[in-house]
Length: 166
Image (cartoon, rainbow, N blue to C red; front, side, top):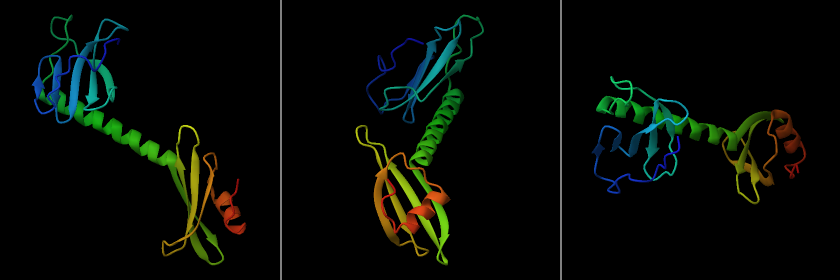
């Protein structure tokens, strides 16, 4: 698929578009495009304001077996739902990669230890923090973004008086 996605999309954000190969509404644009890898068609779902599609998938051929089936309300609504779910899963995965926590038992109490990675392009780092059972922060240090949080590493950090583990 070699088509540029930002060209010829109408610029009036409030105006819905309902053409056979281009639908716009609900914050999304669906564009049916020629699949350059084979003889079929694909549909690209682009969230308003984003440069790249959130979802690109195969699209059904029409009755003539040459042209794509036109977009319709049901297809567009299903595509919006699917593309939004893809974005939600990506956000969940990113959050899980950047925010980790564990709870360890130390001196008769549960201590929650969190690791929040700050993905700076030049100098990424992480904040390692400890919280008591009441949720009050009892320690925090800045450490390497590569720090691996586990129950063992959390316990070692606590036993080392919360000094930077780096």
